[in-house]
Image (tube, rainbow, N blue to C red; front, side, top):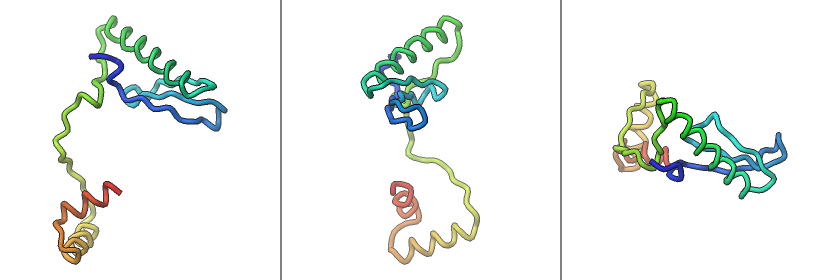
Length: 107
């Protein structure tokens, strides 16, 4: 597993007045920099160091989201009245409840 397969994000931090680099799979880590490029470079280096330390300590290393298999299915529990209202909306639109819920989640 390579650390460049992790999901990285760079965003502006108004509190810090700098760009912040983040890694989705290791949410406790961050790296501040004056530039977005510096934030990305910093978080990638930090992740590589942390993964190396985890391996050396024989601790679990998180798998990159990009390498995980997603079935396309998950269960959501909702109140019966919400279920009923969604079923009515689906029927009115002439689509399945699954298609309606998928469209709502995607928007």
